[in-house]
Structures are given as C-alpha cells and as structure tokens.
Image (tube, rainbow, N blue to C red; front, side, top):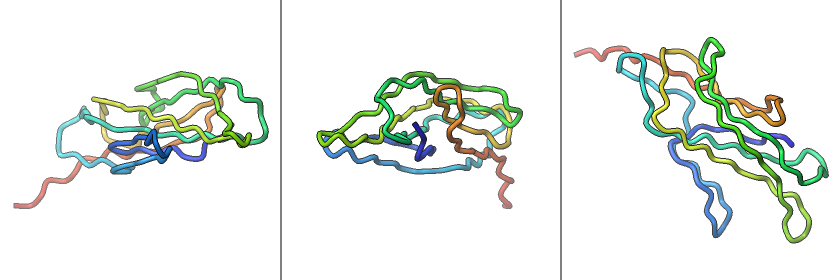
Length: 137
C-alpha cells in the first residue's frame, strides 16, 4: 500500500452519494499574533491510500503522527485500513480523514504530520507555525 496524498485543511469530507473528496481551506502555514503556546481550534488531516500492486485486501496498521521541530510526538492516532474492490474488481483508493480539534503548538517552528503504514513512514505534510510581526500603527 502507498499514499497518494496527505494534506492539512480546515474541513474535509467525502460525499457519500458521489464518493467525491471535498477539501476546504488547504494550508501549510499558520501565522499568529498570540503568545505561545497556541491552540488551533480545528483542522482536518486527509490521507488517500492506494494499492501498489495486486496485493491482497487485508487490513494494514496505519498511524498519523504530529511531531514538533525537535521530533517529539505531540499526537498519535492509530487504526487499520483496508482497500476495497469495485464491482469490476478494480482496487479502489481509500481516504481517511482525521479531524484534529484544539491541538496545541508549544512554540513557533516547522511541525509535521506524517502517515505510517505497518511501521513505515509513507508520507508527510509539514506545517509552519510562525509568529506574525506586530502591524505598524
């Protein structure tokens, strides 16, 4: 299994009628005037997985991690993911959306959401958290 996409956005959902993925407010940088630590109220981390070959459709352990600039884990969410086939036998991509609420960023810097399958890192999405300069009066 491989990852085709790992993205951070304000909102993400898959329409149950059409299967379309909707992403609203994709970002990789947050500017704040607030003092650190800061809390980001709501974001979605979306991963889209695909088969690399005609692999068997078995559950795979997967994990999404958020690490800080020092490599320390701030968040870990684990689960299993299984690809499926359509009525013609084609293996379908599978989308996983993790909604993250009130995540705390202790200091400015580059953070990273990463996706892992079977203990192997398969993708990352960096997120820069920066202190905005005071606006002139």
